[in-house]
Image 1 (cartoon, rainbow, N blue to C red):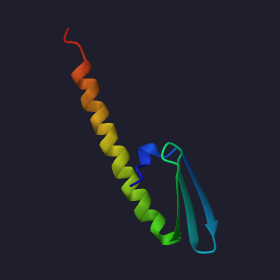
Image 2 (image 1 turned 90 degrees about the horizontal axis):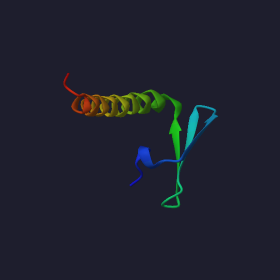
Image 3 (image 1 turned 180 degrees about the horizontal axis):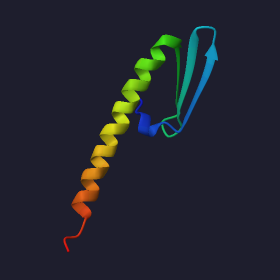
Length: 70
Protein backbone atom coordinates (compact mmCIF):
# COMPACT_ATOMS: atom_id res chain seq x y z
CA UNK A 1 0.00 0.00 0.00
CA UNK A 2 1.27 3.46 -0.84
CA UNK A 3 0.50 6.35 1.51
CA UNK A 4 0.46 9.92 0.27
CA UNK A 5 2.64 11.04 3.16
CA UNK A 6 5.35 8.62 1.94
CA UNK A 7 5.26 9.80 -1.66
CA UNK A 8 8.41 11.69 -2.52
CA UNK A 9 7.57 12.61 -6.10
CA UNK A 10 4.23 13.00 -7.83
CA UNK A 11 3.97 13.85 -11.49
CA UNK A 12 0.87 14.35 -13.57
CA UNK A 13 0.49 14.43 -17.31
CA UNK A 14 -2.61 15.53 -19.19
CA UNK A 15 -3.62 13.54 -22.22
CA UNK A 16 -6.75 13.82 -24.30
CA UNK A 17 -9.47 13.16 -21.68
CA UNK A 18 -7.07 11.15 -19.54
CA UNK A 19 -4.77 11.97 -16.65
CA UNK A 20 -1.66 10.01 -15.82
CA UNK A 21 -0.42 10.19 -12.23
CA UNK A 22 3.03 8.85 -11.37
CA UNK A 23 3.67 8.17 -7.67
CA UNK A 24 7.20 7.43 -6.48
CA UNK A 25 8.13 6.12 -3.04
CA UNK A 26 11.92 5.94 -3.11
CA UNK A 27 12.20 4.31 0.32
CA UNK A 28 10.24 1.28 -0.84
CA UNK A 29 11.46 1.58 -4.43
CA UNK A 30 7.85 1.72 -5.49
CA UNK A 31 6.55 3.33 -8.65
CA UNK A 32 2.82 3.40 -9.35
CA UNK A 33 1.28 4.80 -12.52
CA UNK A 34 -2.44 5.52 -12.65
CA UNK A 35 -4.29 6.29 -15.86
CA UNK A 36 -7.57 7.98 -14.98
CA UNK A 37 -10.29 9.78 -16.87
CA UNK A 38 -10.05 13.52 -16.27
CA UNK A 39 -13.48 13.64 -14.62
CA UNK A 40 -12.05 11.55 -11.74
CA UNK A 41 -9.77 14.42 -10.76
CA UNK A 42 -12.53 16.26 -8.88
CA UNK A 43 -13.16 13.14 -6.76
CA UNK A 44 -9.46 12.66 -6.05
CA UNK A 45 -9.11 16.35 -5.13
CA UNK A 46 -12.10 16.10 -2.77
CA UNK A 47 -10.54 13.10 -1.00
CA UNK A 48 -7.14 14.80 -0.77
CA UNK A 49 -8.71 17.90 0.79
CA UNK A 50 -10.34 15.61 3.33
CA UNK A 51 -6.92 14.18 4.21
CA UNK A 52 -5.43 17.67 4.51
CA UNK A 53 -8.29 18.85 6.76
CA UNK A 54 -7.87 15.81 9.00
CA UNK A 55 -4.13 16.49 9.30
CA UNK A 56 -4.80 20.16 10.10
CA UNK A 57 -7.26 19.10 12.81
CA UNK A 58 -4.67 16.78 14.37
CA UNK A 59 -2.04 19.54 14.26
CA UNK A 60 -4.43 21.98 15.93
CA UNK A 61 -5.12 19.46 18.70
CA UNK A 62 -1.38 18.98 19.19
CA UNK A 63 -0.77 22.75 19.30
CA UNK A 64 -3.55 23.17 21.86
CA UNK A 65 -2.11 20.44 24.06
CA UNK A 66 1.35 22.07 23.96
CA UNK A 67 0.16 25.55 24.94
CA UNK A 68 1.24 26.59 28.39
CA UNK A 69 -1.30 27.87 30.87
CA UNK A 70 -0.51 31.48 31.99
